[in-house]
Each structure stands twice: as C-alpha cells, then as structure tokens.
Amino acid sequence: MHRFAALALVAFAAVAGIVASGGRASADSLLSNLEARACEDPYILAKIVDRFRYQTRNVPHLPHVDITDFRGIHEHRYLPYGEDWPIARRYCGATAALSDGSDRTIWYLIEDGMGFVGIGDNVEFCVSGFDRWFVYNGHCRILR
Image (cartoon, rainbow, N blue to C red; front, side, top):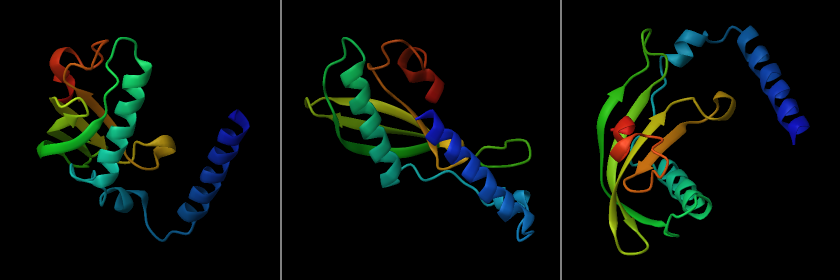
C-alpha cells in the first residue's frame, strides 16, 4: 500500500509540474477562483453519512445508528479564499434525522482543496452527543 501511495504522489507531482511549466495559468489565478462546496452539496452530505456510519460502528459505546436525512441545512459562516486566508472554508449546520427516530444537531466544516494530496474537499463534522472523546469540544463548539 505504501508503494502505491508513493507512486501516486510521484505521478501527481509529475503532472502538476508539466501543467505548471506550460504557463497557461498561474497558481494565484487558479486559487483565486476556488470556493468551498455548498452546504447542500450531495457529495458532502454522502461523505458525512459514510463517515458517521464508520464512526458509530468503530467507536466503543456509541449506538449503531445511521443518518437517514438532513433538514434545515444552513450556512452560518463563510471564509473565502484570499491573501490573508489561503483556504476557503464554509461552516454549516443542520438537523440530522437518525435511524432510531431521533433528531440531532450536526455542525460541519467544508475546506476547499484540503482532501488527500490537496485534491477534493475535506469535511469535518460533529453530531451532537456523538463526540465521545470531545474532539470538537463540548457540544461541537469548534465547528459552530
């Protein structure tokens, strides 16, 4: 697996070098057009559902529930890309309907271009009552 990751990184660097040497667009002009995906983006919501399912199955003493629906999705803060802020970030909130019939508040952050090797978006999320080790502080404070 490590060889595959190293090979993928080398291939990505080679392609990036070829594109950069072509002079078609500068890095600043490419980055200035970046913005984090919308809170309602199906890709982001699917990512949260999958990661939540993994969390509830692998963290001890959490109930085995799934997110079945999102309601009241809203953006409560957006930090666009800029010289002082190199990563576009979108802070979102919603109500997650769980498979056991309960509703929980969910807070999530979408970071543009912060996925694996800088490709794709990173999503951090916290479902109220499921942050067993207080990674996001009490009541998901870090992501609010």
